Image (cartoon, rainbow, N blue to C red; front, top):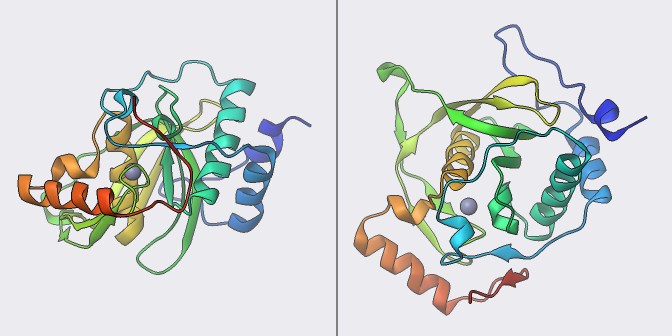
Length: 212
Ligand SMILES: [Zn+2]
């Protein structure tokens, strides 16, 4: 059986959203154990500061990239990882993240697009945010506490993913990455400077790609 056949069978709930809360442990382990962990790109690396290319081939090479992304995410202890964070210019992100209720979500989104929220659903949450590509820095950033992302799974099937709380933040953060934005780009000048100073002063617990 190919990887796609074992991994691709994620159902949808009665509202059409992908079910990404079942067998999280086993699904995450399967990806990660097939993959190879790669070093993480950091702020200043050009691959992080431009829009990535759309995924057009849903093939074994993409499946291998996703495996490596899960392996890298685990090594760096991240809750989400975009392909350009391991130096690959493609619109794919993976996640392993708890929501508002502490429920774990594991999945992959290709070619993500954030859906516009109804004004009444737009409630801002100003929790702390961090990024593997801005190691050791954190800053408070207001974002909607609910998010819906539209995209495709690893086989190219259309999917919609929704999240609350920290997972909503993750969906927005990872989608931003693939359009060339880091969370620090959404901070005030002063907070951005402070985050970069935190990064200068800290030492990441995982391997990073040195900037040229
Ligand atoms: Zn990030």
